[in-house]
Amino acid sequence: MYRLLIVDDEKHVIEGIKFDLDLVSNEISELYTANNMRQAIEIFAEHPIDIMLCDIEMPQGSGLELLTWVRENHPETETIFLTAHADFKYAKQAIQLGSLEYLIKPALVDELEAALSKARIKISEQNKLHHVNQLWSQNHPLLVERFWMDLLDQTIPSHKTVIQEAAEQRNLVYTETMTFLPVLISVQRWHKPLSIREEKIMEYALKNTAQEMIVQQATNGQMISIDRGKILVILYFDTYKDDTLDQLARSAEDYIASCVQYFYCDLCCYIGTNGYMHEVLSIVQGLIALDNNNVAFNNKVFSLKGKTVSPVQIKLPNMAVWSAMLKKGTKEKIISEATEYLEHLVRTDGLDANLLRQLYEDFLQMTYFVLNLKGIQAHQLFCDELSLQLSRNATRSVTDLIAWMRHTVEKAKDQAEAVEEAISVIDSVKKYIAVHLSQSELSRDELAEHVYLHPDYLSRFFKKETGISITDYLLQERVNLAKGLLSKSDMPIGNVALSVGFSNFSHFSKMFKKATNMNPNDYRQQNGVQSEKKSGKR
Image 1: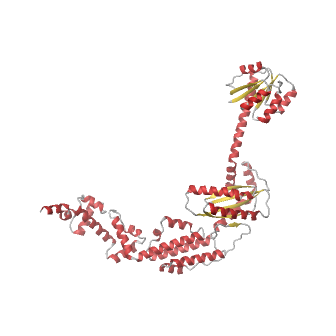
Image 2: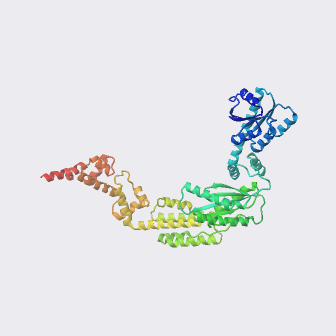
Image 3: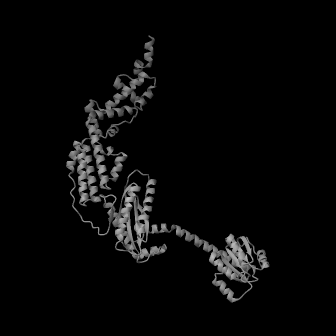
């Protein structure tokens, strides 16, 4: 619905228009009238006006003067002139001032309604355009981010012409001389456990700080989250100076120091080289490679400029020596040697992600070999959440690898010592059996898993230490418990069978008789509650 203002010094003209005009069919929700320019301005001050229907010659200011004022103060209002003057000079001025229509009195109702319809259509189109502009203004950063993401994942090929066309299609205007400098911010670790939501909040804080401390070095910049804990900053430069990289490196150092202090994390910044839009992808790929190969340093700024990779032959440590140390339980010596070896590689710049992975794999193989010799199931020993987490992070950095090595060696040594203490292992198995006697499917494999030993190794070990097999011991314990339940309670024999791990009553009777030379019912008759009562009576 639209708001209409009629301005004319002749009151009968206003009344005639009001009488002839069907407000509903012309979508007029509010109708205002004024007899001169001063009154019209007062109405504008109090009400928004969509369409103004105005005479030209009026006292206290002409309609052309009023339109000039409206254009300056309320440019969204559409104006239709309704005048007795057919002078071309007036019509020309009206058109120059932006009048939508110029009607001659007395105008037919159809002419007036056609002019009003034309005004409504124009206002509607302007409103749609305004809405689109609002959306563009709000979503422009998202459109730019989507553009860069498409470029980086190669949905948009890195070809100069193709990129320019893609930018134009999205109304993203870049000059040919504009250059870009990517900076990769990579979080290495958080110093305290964070949920996914908390991590996202912290990354948002990292972005805001980067906006203040890094983006300000350029004409403008775009930040993109390209992976968990990885933020890509693309800086735009109208003019690139020789000292730009040095200034940027200093800003990145200050940024890292602030993040370490306030956001509880270790992170590195990787500064790229300056290039045109079609060169950005290769520069970013270089930064990601730098990050992947940085396994030695924390909280440092790296520059892609002048960075070359020279192949270096590195001799891996002798795992046979470390294996012998682990067998003897000298865990501190292993950790000391591993730390010294890694620190040497860091000092000589000989450590990369590939070498760290090789060292991890060799150490893992060595550990599993030693544990296997001792009959320990390594995959069961290290299936807890802490072990798995440390293993997942082990190849990220030297710090993470040493933490994993220390955990692995300590846990392996502790379990090996437990195995060597026969009494503790046998006691652990016996206690587990006592707690789980009612479990009908209690197996040798389950018992072996409980003490991290191979089932065959546990069977031999158990019989050697106790003189009885696990199977016979398990049956013995079940029968002993059944004896107690039969003699000390009036529990139905079927329930007794279930309580000691027999789901089949017939099988329970058979095994019970095999062990006691009598069936469960006879045993209860001789030793149970009823026999004691009879004995008391006598």
